[in-house]
Length: 564
Image 1 (cartoon, rainbow, N blue to C red):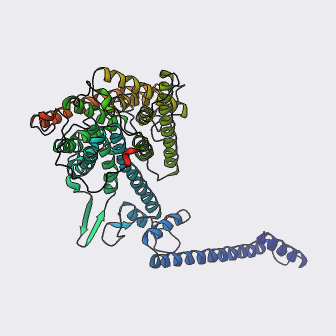
Image 2: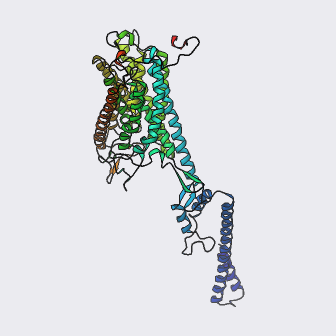
Image 3: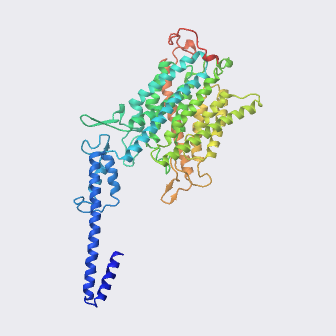
């Protein structure tokens, strides 16, 4: 617009002078004015670039390198590339950004060669993911208190100390076994180029050998493995506690401790490595199994090993001759323990389903919490109503209602991330009914199972794997919602057709492997412990043995806690 007005003024001036200047002179003068304006514009742009370059230099001196790197990446959007790199101001250095991209991030920044500081985005996402894993691990660890209270309430009062000591020993032994071999066999390499394990289990990171590195003397570089180790140790102890509940009131301390060590250090890690550790089950077919919350890995394995514990230990003394002496002795402990286990289950399912590094991950965690809640509520209501109907409305059975809640939680764990609310209600209801039917059948078979480990965790764990293939978000179509995501399982043609059939087939293979492996290896452990009389210390007590000298009696009056 400025050039146009100037050109018009020149033409008017030329007309006023009677055409003293030729048209060529007028055009040349207009061109000189235009070039002067463009030169002024370039000078102003160069001044802006110089100021921004000075600001970046100041940031490099005053701020952490990670923040400068983030701003440098943003500046690349408007800077012009050049074959000369950053030889002159206002032109981006592509080489500098490429160098920053391949350098390994470090908590020490660029203190030593080949390293760089974490960017702001990396800092935030990594901190959120690790904080989320730790929080979920704390919740899963707290579940141990709930399981101990439930087992104490379902068993006899005289075995309270025995059960509590067993739980404490089990947690401590599992931590040592998970450190020595459990983690390494579950999640360590070597891996192939495709990202899958080369072998059925890992051969690296034994004794936490790869958790930290020393790039140079005086510097220790941490890794996220310690956080992941803690969370999965808590999950491992949960599965081991399910297994140990099968021998409630009967198993000796030393024998149970050795079985727990073998379970956490060898039996459980092999199943984890096959799926969560990127093992052979991942590509068993086009989709692979779906076991987000561990209905198969955690609960079915624990329930299967618990079945072996029940069979090898045998029934408690006079269990079927005087059944009235073996009723649960403390309802408040059972109910409070159920609340704690239910509360901790959110850490289990939400922690296994996804981290919280992105908004999509947060949506997944919220959906998992919703389906977990609905399945637990559905299982508890189903058990409550069934016994109201059986007793014709006279009274309910809160002991079985609490187990119905746990049955619903176990059932929904595999498919908690890709079910609708209706499917979660249905899965919890069916799981509760399966528990009630299986528990009644096992009692008729005279299987002494005070916690109903086999029916609640074994049978409902199987149902959880089946339901993860059948009850999916897209139940009315042939599509299948991918676990921990918001899109269907896809192939080169888009959404896979009839993918639920492939998921169900993979889950059946996963079920057979987890069940068979746990049964076989647990039998070897328990049977050998019984041969050396560590599982059942002496036949004189007829499998009802608790050494009278093992527990130290405290002085003072007895607690009134058990008189509630």
